[in-house]
Image (cartoon, rainbow, N blue to C red; front, side):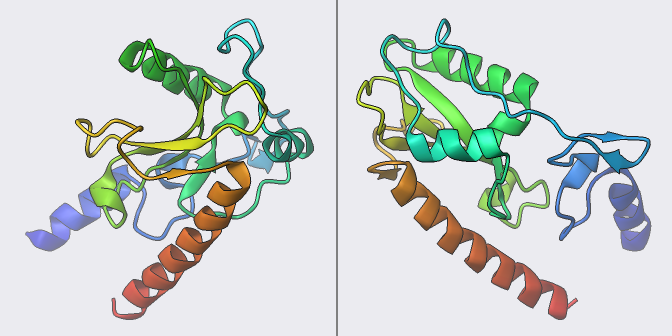
Length: 178
């Protein structure tokens, strides 16, 4: 019985260890070929007044050379998802705008029990080096101002690289014992 359930679940969803579960891929595919997609950055008309993306993030988005941060997915490569999550943050925190730029999602539950985690720029910053606030959908009562945050994008990317390396090591260890 347990084997039949596992087979059914695996046939309908991404299995643990797949780089992009549910058929999602960071690059869109046409006829099974990867296609280039220009990174999406919000237009200033919908951004908080005076907000500027940090130069390091803009450079990555414009080059499209996203670092391999298994677990983290940069939203600039998915315009509909990016807009949806931004709208959600505006509705949830109308007086303190957050601009999401990356998310984690592990439906296998290996990380954060499968809950989405967003990395967001603090939209109130007008100097071009916004603080990065973390919103964890698994802990919705904690606001991004109560959670872990990073002083800027460079500090966040450094922490995300360490977190990614740890995640990859734990994932490899888990798969080794399967």
